[in-house]
Length: 293
Image 1 (cartoon, rainbow, N blue to C red):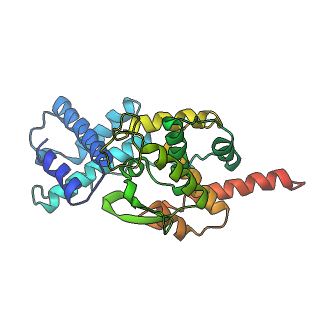
Image 2 (image 1 turned 60 degrees about the horizontal axis):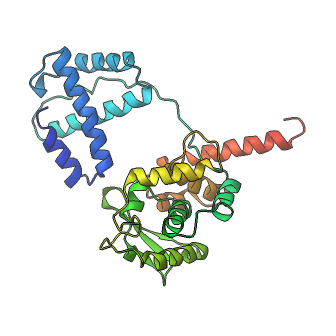
């Protein structure tokens, strides 16, 4: 697709999008490009019409894509054409007249507080380097609510032991400071002590037993395995622990603005979805406790 690489470079260098976001945009645009070539024989980006986009939506539906997936792909395409308009490469956006399918809101999946207590207090992770590291990975997600990409990029020097804080580099290179609990600091000191036995030149806080930087799939496997020991929720991922962190803070009285800052959300609307979990919890308690519920 014309101007494809230029747009991806714009996302990386000017919008400061993460590698994960860039890859998602690349996949969506490549699929649209393949569709145009196969079904419309389009060779120039200026030839793309609203009708072609609508037909692509029908094609995606026929292939079994969910409304949520289609909305995301349309969002990628819309961002691409907005970029082309700003660069004066096209004079119209074929997405302007496109109505995206409605998507029902999904409540964030989270792990119950008692289950996280069991995981961190009763489950045996082992006393070797991998065991202590794996436990700290789970604890870091739970005590800080950071994203997978943020955890992997953490450096040893990002932790300030005197102030009990952690500096996290979030989306679009935005830094935030997260306070750390004393019990977490104890776990961290234990890990750093045993990490000294690993031969590594990596600055990253978390490394493999070979001294290499962690990679996403390894962390996902670790989280999936240990969460499966205490919960039956369908999805077991680092992001579920992030949801758990936010939901439990809200349940214990934290303000939405405070949670927004801790999570690194750009705006409050992204944080407000956690209020639905709290309402669901109230409904559950009400149903169990009220004699006529």
